[in-house]
Length: 279
Ligand SMILES: NC(=O)c1ccc[n+]([C@@H]2O[C@H](COP(=O)([O-])OP(=O)(O)OC[C@H]3O[C@@H](n4cnc5c(N)ncnc54)[C@H](OP(=O)(O)O)[C@@H]3O)[C@@H](O)[C@H]2O)c1
Image (cartoon, rainbow, N blue to C red; front, top):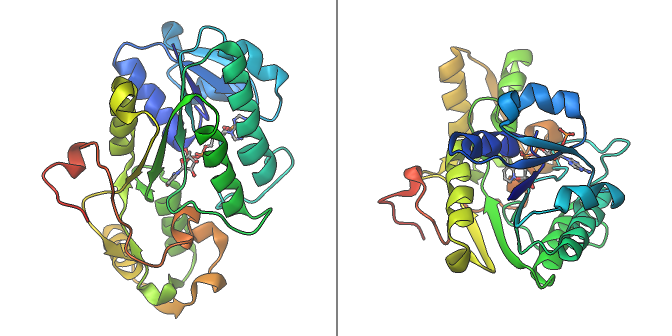
C-alpha cells in the first residue's frame, strides 16, 4: 500500500487523483480531514485518510501500518512564509526525520521524496540546508530511496504561475527577476506525476537514485512573463530587477538557487520528455 504525505498539496493532489484513476486506493496523510475531503477524490472510499502531522511522531504510527512505499511531498516551500506549525526547519528537517524513523519502525521498504531543484549544502539553519538534510537523512536511512527534484511546475493553479498571474493582475509594473535572463525549464504537473508513477512501478531501476526533471523547453523569465501577458491579454511595464529585490511570493525556491540553465539528468520519459535530448 502507498502512503502519500502532503496529499492535499499541489503535487500530492494530482498524484492521488492519478493513483485513484489507476485503481489504487492510496492512504493520504493529512492535517485537516474536512479540508482534505474537499480537495481529494474522497467519494466511495476511493482513498483512505489518516490524520497526521510529520512534526508529531505519535500521529505517524497509525499511518504507517501496512505501508510498503511512501511518497513524501509534505514540505514547506520557500514561497510560503513561515507561520505557527509551518516552520521550514520543523517540517522539512524534523518532520522528515520523524517520517523516516516511523517508516523504519513499521517496516516500510521505500520512500520517494519530492525535493527541490538544485538542493545543496548551505549555511546551518538555512532553508536550503534544511532541504539538503532532508535528502541526506533519507539517503542514509537504510531504506530504499528515490529523490525527485523537479524544475518549476506549470499547470492549472501551479504556485509559480499563480504568483505571476496575480502580480500581473494587480500591478502595473512587473519586475524581471535577474534582469529577465534567469532560465527556467518548466515541467507540467501531470508529467511530474507520470515520473512518480514510473518510479513507483520500477523499484529496482530507480532504487537509490536522484532524478532531476524538467520539461522539454527552456524559457527566460522575460519569455515566461511575455507568454503570460499574451495569454491574459494584458500589457505591463517590465522593469529589470536583481533577484534579491524581488518579493518571495513571486520567486520560486527551486529556481532562486540557480541562475544558470536548468539541466535535466536521468529522464524517465514522461510524455513531454520523449524524443528529446537533454544535456
Ligand atoms: N510546486 C512546484 O512548482 C514544485 C517545484 C519543484 C519542487 N517541488 C517540491 O515538491 C514538494 C511538494 O510541493 P507542492 O508544490 O506540492 O507543495 P504544497 O502545495 O505547498 O503542499 C505541501 C503539502 O505538505 C503538507 N504539509 C506541510 N506541512 C506538513 C506537516 N507538518 N505534516 C503533514 N503535512 C504537511 C501540506 O498540508 P496542508 O494542506 O495541511 O497545508 C500540503 O499538503 C516540495 O518538496 C516542493 O519543494 C514543488
